[in-house]
Image (tube, rainbow, N blue to C red; front, side, top):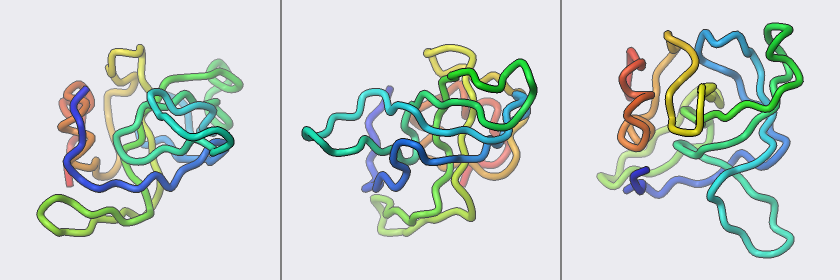
Length: 133
């Protein structure tokens, strides 16, 4: 996994709900854990673009509901600053459900744009993405 060159804030704390932008069968996820995120004692872990999270499926197909799935955050509403000075923000918070911990997406079609930082960090997600912003 590659480091991010941008200064990305982490606006999605634990228990935040995010939409799913692929055709994996899940519709709404609730963030349960943020993998690889270090915090001080007592601080709630939070996720931002490109972060690997474990999430519980709240809405979607019956076989997926109430299960914990790995996911990657691909869009966030809170603006972030890229290394070239451009500020980027999206209309919604969205994630992509993964098959395994290696970064292979479960869905075969993504709705909406994917951040460039995610495409650089997770090449398997970039292959499926139709629009990279």
